Image 1 (tube, one colour):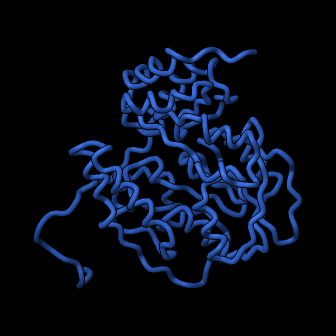
Image 2 (cartoon, one colour):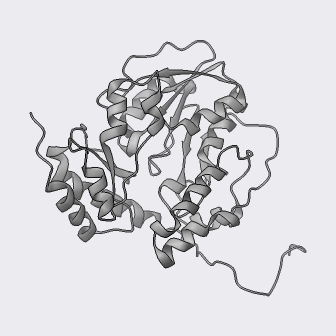
Image 3 (tube, one colour):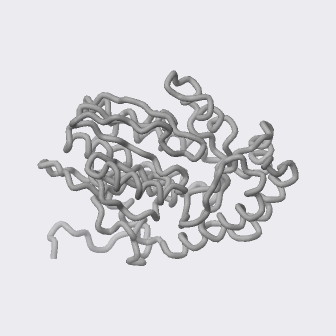
Length: 326
């Protein structure tokens, strides 16, 4: 027995253990952006080509690894608008937007293989691909404050310390007692904490919480809720969605023609984020990508909700939604 193990005393969290973590074989790090940093430090490309429609936080690993960024645009199908030319040591990052682009990611892997990094931060249940790296962000799907999963052939020689995250759970615990709005400031503080975080292994607390999740239930629920919203709202959705092959996505992305809909949803406590406001000020972003920032509504479909909540969303959106012109 480990001589340093503590026995007795007060109880800690007991998240349970389902044993069904789909990424048990991955390298467990302390954030998705640090998963990207790990790959860049191990591979050392001269440039990384990445989409202009992307969160600024994913540029941080490039700065820390001294890798030059180059940008491309995405089209109406959220696919690369013009095939990029890769230099000898260049790498290409593609985001599996909202968990909708599994088939396209497989085609990219067949095309770019060892130069491709797939960002599955929005596609937790998508399998890793035969490419340079696939990375995941569990906090976008489950109640944890940090953590990331990485599949990559390239590896660093240095041993990584384990991170700690006990001091970042106030917003998670507070929401259970008092609701999300009461702890939104703490949520924002937890998000800011991830910036500049040293490259470390996933904390023991985050690992324990993730091992206590019923992943199959989460996958089934997300799939069912996505289909419910798509059946009711798909004809009015300005974003083209091929629902075949979508499994356990992050949200239902509804591209609205109604500029007031976001605030009406929030007023009825249907919280929809804006991805990503910094794109509006990007010289590399296209008009289409800026339109996505302003008008795309990521409707919640996660495992906390069922048919009643989905129908409530449909009623709120559908009251003002009109079918898209054919």
